[in-house]
Length: 141
Image (cartoon, rainbow, N blue to C red):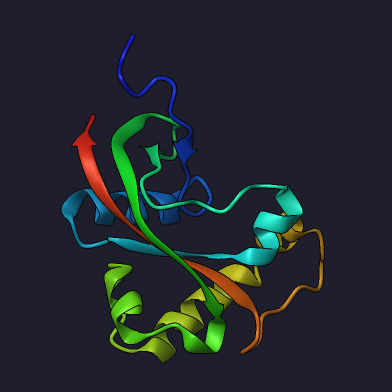
């Protein structure tokens, strides 16, 4: 039995090209932050992550690729996400506006609207987001 078998999965995006890019960014060290919607946590009845928690990052095929440790969590208004957080998402954003536009496209997608239980869901400046920071503890792949 591996030391990570009892850890929950850490899922970035939905399986497919986006998740594959995000996982690669984590493994390269470029991605050390991520952002989720507080309403998604609420809709799914999921507790917010806490600093010190560990989880297993999985790829699109649900294979474990790394053990991650949460190093910080903030719940902030979407309008208050700062440049450091946007840059640390490791997806090549040069500004908060670029980061936000890409995230809005994702959050307004059909799968996300399904996840929050509202087919017309949209975000605005006051939408509460979960700004999470993490580090790779161990590579598994």
